[in-house]
Length: 363
Image: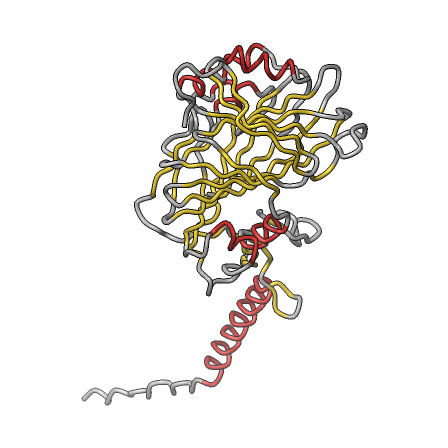
């Protein structure tokens, strides 16, 4: 499964995003211009390669992501994102129209239009199951049985977590999920977080295809989500979970013989197996209406699909609109027909008058 999420702005004290929460330190702000995640799922294991593009004045911030089972974390391959951008790009084509439209002569100047596993009983409320430094990231893998205790742990470690987010984490705690808490910090520890951060790669067991979205209900601005799903079949969400209807923008099977199918970074996510790639776009104009996580299932058929971006152009020949040539041709045909009729009438022979019959004299 490949997930791409675009965010507007995340500002202190905290705002949620699609699969976690960005938590800057107090009196600072950070905006995530774009979050892109690539997720592969083989029916048993999920792997997510996540990259953030950020700006702001915060020298550090936290990213919190719920996961259904214990996760391993390592640095990802940045080239994966450029490969996927090329692979799923829309196909551009030109289509022509006959009659002039607004913007075409004689209406106006011509122009082109584009259309574009859980902790055991009796475990402490918060358990640190692993911690490592990966590039600019301080990664803590946590298990928690109490959302308030999770909030306290984060606060004790230098992050402000609002009460609303602790409440939003309650369903994950009830399901015995775990968490990956990531401190985003520059290498010198002083510069603000700006630009593309190094990607992270998470792997965890999962027997169903699920993308955590509950925390996004805390977002203050509309959210846009892009899901790029790599699985055995074409996939679709079970529901809209409070957003607009999801829209498929790409669907196609990938194998080593397909364009881009054998590239290195993408092949590492595919695991050497032919898979089906489904790209899904969805908007959340009212994030507070989000009522669950995305669960995806196989679609009824593995029908391929690709987004087409058309540029409409007036049909011309030698720079002259075909409709003008057609009208001129019609005028010439009508004029020629009239001349032909007139010529035929002039050449038609005139019939002689009937002979005069003189009656015989009487008597």
